[in-house]
Amino acid sequence: MTNQPLELIAESFAGGNAIPYIGPGVLALKHSGSQLPGSPLALAGRLTSKSSVPFKIKNNLTAAAQFIENFKHRRTVSNAMTEAFGADAQPTRLHMLLMNLPSLPLVVHAWYDDLPQKALSARAGWGMAQGVSQSEHFGNWVHYYDSDGTQAGVRYGDRQADWKTLLYQPLGSVWPERNFLVSDSDFVEVLTEIDIQTPIPEVVQEIRKGRNFLFLGCRFSTQLERMFARQIMKRSSEKHWAVLPEEPTRNEARFLEQYNIERLPMTLSEFAATFSTTQLVH
Image 1: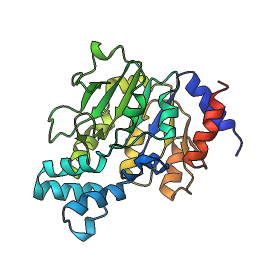
Image 2: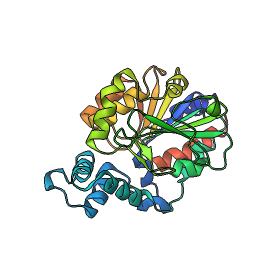
Image 3: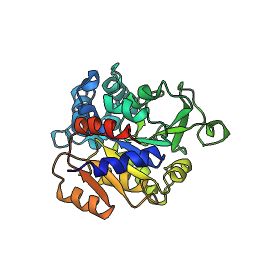
């Protein structure tokens, strides 16, 4: 593969027109954060190691979380999620590379760890929008936070207008307030409204217009993964990229083709090394 896609990506980032969409696979990069669960299957294993669930749903993250919530209380799920992502892990090289780009209006982080927050900590003028569970915050879809973790309201307003970078975490995050969308009932609520974009912050809808998405550490093999990606990138640019070293499944290939997402068949380590060099000339 030539470096042409990397050059286009670097050019898009240099103009503030690219949006990183970071999935759990980024945790596979070798670093001290490798103890964090880096896939839905790994996370399901963490949850079910603490609570017994029926064998047929043991590897199904959302169903296992729902079972635990039903029979042991929502707090049990929240505590298990906090324990799974509470390790003092450090950002990967890729996190640091992306979060230090000069022009970065929006980052989408579709997992529960806080490594993007840590990578952004040296940056001025940023804040967070996190999805929240209806079972815990009925009537609110998102909470906003300043970079120090102080809650900045449940609606985007003047206080957030000075943020130059918005970290959008649609599934929530362990920091600062342990917001997690993880059980079946969490997602039923969101998916009921997501077609009309209600759970997606208006500011995200505005920033994404005309911009390109770069998917990193993401798979599109399940309907849930595809639906979130599709709805978050709606009304954006007509060109996107995904770093995907594995051969895509049939459903993934169809999704990539349908939304004009160019697959980059390289590892995340290879991408980080090549992109850092390419980015220097833009």
